[in-house]
Image: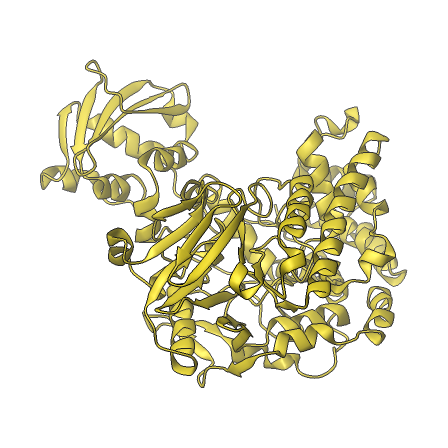
Length: 619
């Protein structure tokens, strides 16, 4: 395959340095590679399932991605530096343990409670059993805080016994990023991470950033110490940390830190073993490539020249001052080139798809393994930069108000002479190696008539070929999941919910925002107003419905509202979001209503249930 042939020369020149860095300092791994969920139903993570990666890449995998997966799935406990340890390969992210003398500082406690606990157990068994003195959240993504309940507890954090350190704005962003668009993001995340795919040489083989995310219990403990400025120092035990705030880079709230006594630099998720996403396939706000490059420049100036080891929240450490300076500089230059050249071409009149087709890193940057597109790619990152500055519209009037996919597909198929002719054209395109055009043709055929199983199967075959060529783990997973759903439909998965810890940290206003985006506008035409008083939180909220929208105002009540409803917040959550019959809670006295009782029922009736398995590759 041509896409695979392109990387074989690079592979032949591989100095295997990354493999050395990945294995250096290995101490031990778990005897049982399956880490079970606390409920015992299935494994939160099973490192043994990546055993198929031994040996040479088969024809079903891009050899460059195969190499990346071999590095990312090395698992166990590693000594990074004197008194600095990491557990890697048991989640998409890594967890670091810093020996602070009388106890441990835990940095980024993974995605779920079970794997974080297993990591701490591994450190306790093979290094030292000590109390956890502090937990650091480097940024506001769940794979860096969700496992905190496996290494400490809320009571110790509340008492100050354990310091929980995070960048300013962490809590707001941690609980808000996935709330408003959470259902759509979770559905799309299945494609990005290949969550329903088999794990083998024809299926999921990491996301390119790390192994598959663990699927255990989520937790969240609110920070009790915030980093508010670059240069801020915090001492834990006998260790002093110097922080660098980097908001708007890989996360809206993020930070790096330096350990002077160890000459060690922690780069959070700002410097990875791959080009990162400026806009994840699952969806998010577009990240700022310019700010990302600028903060890497600042980190180089502040810390690189006095660092002997660099470690991060994903991937592997790097060793030696010259290695660290070269890595950070080349990584920085890749993001800077991506930003500046996208904007240059954009200002020359090229559209996002034209820029993506033309833009390529200079060879000196592209040959660095850590700049290759295993997780983010030049193609979709350049489109993200275009979107950040100019939005979705490319200024061509034909694209100002185009037809939606289904009616457009029917017209395309009709214009090409019917589905059978479209499928023949796609077969010819496939034979000529033009898989992208074949996919476009067949996508029209499927959207014109999703009952055409032959077209679905043909498109699934094209997606599979594209997946096997893809260097990006995310693209491979997306193509293979698309093929899976064309052949058998979406694999039913339950709607994602919020853990009790996350719910506790989520403000009522945020939850009411989530309610507002689930309102059926036809049911919200008749206006009404309700006062909500949450007795356990001493909160007041005025809710106004009408004109197809739901408005809420915190700290406000209206004496002329049609009803005043008093309850504890769990009763609001259960009746508004979880389908608990509100009448039963009124009859039991848990919900008290003054005024028109039916109005609370009207409010509950506005909220539509989440659709977790909506179609993506079919109409």
